[in-house]
Length: 268
Image 1 (cartoon, helix red, strand yellow):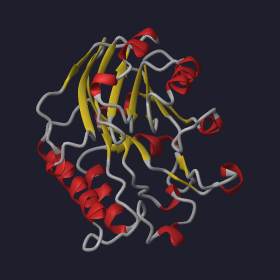
Image 2 (image 1 turned 90 degrees about the vertical axis):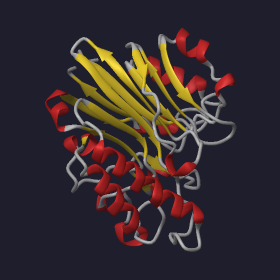
Image 3 (image 1 turned 90 degrees about the horizontal axis):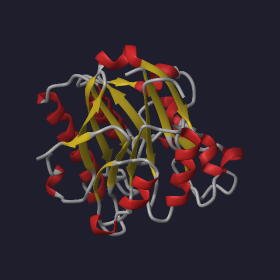
């Protein structure tokens, strides 16, 4: 592992169910910080002791039963960010943030789980899709007014914004996660002042996926993936980027999530 900070983001799709998989991830990848989404565990039942035994002494989490939930696991000291917005007036555990205290100075880290949006890409007939669009709009507006330096945004954004972030741009243009209303809003959020750290290493002309549906009997053969998981950074951190890996092999681990972890390495 390179010197610096190794950050992993992963939609774990139930923390308690996949705790052994998380232990394997930790042993295999040796991350300094893991950001999780869809932990699906209320705070009183969060497996803090097990995670501290793995070496993550600093924890920040927000969860609920059966749905959503986000968590930051860190080997570095962290200070949770207080009084973050309650997006779209819902207390649905989709965002936490923390200051990570590194030898080079603090880094502000945000962990997001953006609403999936349901199946019908019409905000008039599908309240879940309307919620998704409003969520991204509100987050974008908030970041336009917030000081942005040494900041990292990660998570399952549930949107694949670029043509080669999906297996078929043409066939998925009217499928939730790749529709123009979603991709336009996500790009507006990015353009508030962030850099797509994954595409810093993999050109936009190349296919790049982080999610493969459970419905695909042979996910490798069909390779009908989407890039729903993202790592964004402020421009001042670009010189500190040293590597990025999509851990595709995790899709074949025992009881896998339909998402795979994404690693970004920094020389911080």
